[in-house]
Image 1 (cartoon, rainbow, N blue to C red):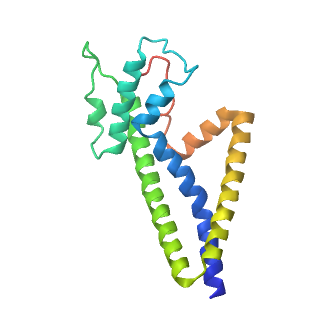
Image 2: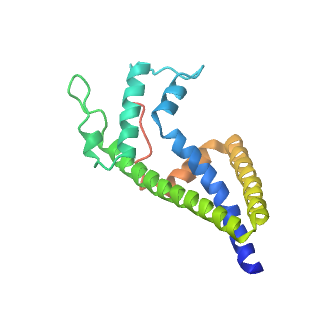
Image 3: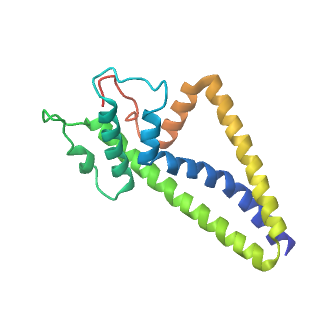
Length: 182
């Protein structure tokens, strides 16, 4: 029984950072976050002619695509008032990759949440809540350590972190954009 308790403690401690980071990701992919972000003091103006309302509009349509089950035509059919497409082929290809990544991460997130709830209920029934909360605490410390490591990496070399992340999760160079892209 001691092995099982320790095993679950390790799984819980690992699930906490994943669950917390993916909860943050879930929040970032919502319209209220887009509105908050675009209204932050010091948020850069668009030098290519989009108003803040335009940016929020197109961002929310992109979020809608990421959160629904529609194919890429959902974004591919979008046009500006003059009839030109909003997104080019490279951007659309990247959005397909982003959707796959996002949907995968959300499935993992739901699994983490379900696991943590079920583990908590089992801990309560088996009377090992103290072990459960110790594992949650260890997961919290692990989360702080991971966030600290990410923060140091961002401060030292954001470009390298950004590049490694995109090469790890996205196909080819669809994530590289020109200043003329939407």
